[in-house]
Each structure stands twice: as C-alpha cells, then as structure tokens.
Length: 105
Image 1 (cartoon, rainbow, N blue to C red):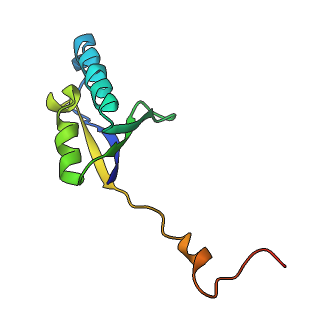
Image 2 (image 1 turned 120 degrees about the vertical axis):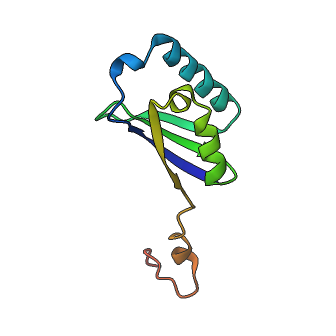
Image 3 (image 1 turned 60 degrees about the vertical axis):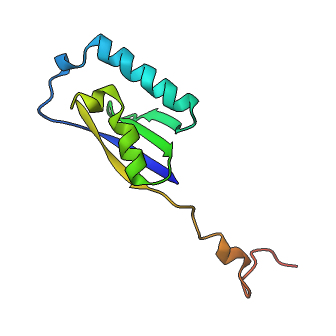
C-alpha cells in the first residue's frame, strides 16, 4: 500500500531543539528506509520547510510505526499526517463496454 506522509511542525518546538546530531541521525534513518524500499520518494515542500514522504507499507499502522522510528518524531519534534493512497480508478472508464472513443475512425 502506498502511503503519503506530510510533516506537520509542532508549534511549541523551538528551532534550537533541532540539533546537528539529530539532523544527521534523521538523514541516516531516512537513507536506511529509502535503501530498504520503504521510503519510495522524499521531498520538501517548496513553500515551507516540511517533508513529504511516499512510503510503501502493508497498512497505515505500519507506516506510523516506521515514521515513529525517525529521530525527530521519536524526540517529539515533528509529526506526520498519514494518508493511505489507492490507484486512480478512472482509466477503467476508457475501456468499459460502450466507452466513447475520442478518436474518429
């Protein structure tokens, strides 16, 4: 199952709490998860400093457990909104009996 995880900053957390050691540990763990195939894509939003991750997991509970292993989450400095995804079903309309073709023959 594909999971979208969007980082949500915690308002009460101060910037000074994000130490270089924690940042390095976070990057190391993200690298491990990427190499394992769990983190399929990693991004930062262009409009703010928040991570957006695409995970491949068995379910939402597994995704939450994996995200909890990130040092910044484990230290209570950030959290993620976790959204399960499914494949887009709209293409089936193109191949259903009686579907209208956009091409003229």
